Image: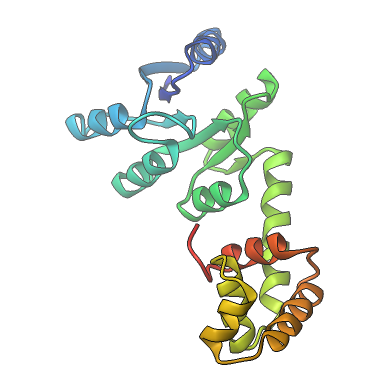
Length: 214
């Protein structure tokens, strides 16, 4: 029995290489290749009864990316497995995909053997994440846990939020009805408390904690 696969990637050279690898095996039938997730989403809509075992997708693609595609696939059927093959190692992207039940993730520079192992593992009903992706995921979780353990007072949150919004020390003082000296003290204490080096570090922390949009 052959497994039915769909592949989405907008880089033709990579897509052709992946097809060459899979066609050299006897276990896979390629139902469709596409340059974006929208094409695949439409295919799933038109062919609701098609037996699809695995969708292999990149993340960054025109019209619909791999993150959005994974959400659509999982909403449609938990029986369709998804494997992300991408150069992206952004922790938030990885978190998002895992949160929405992606079945695997390997980098594009993975060896052929690891790619095939990932496919086989996923088709057997298990998850597969490369060591690199696991390390990034765990490091991000640890970092977020550390951030959550740091408790800021409401006044400190007010100050760091305004700093991240690029208000000057005097403007922050005026908005919070405090002296300029007091705001400077808050800023110094926040830098020490959060173990960052400067205002850019405070801004980065404020964005990570969703105090401000970015």
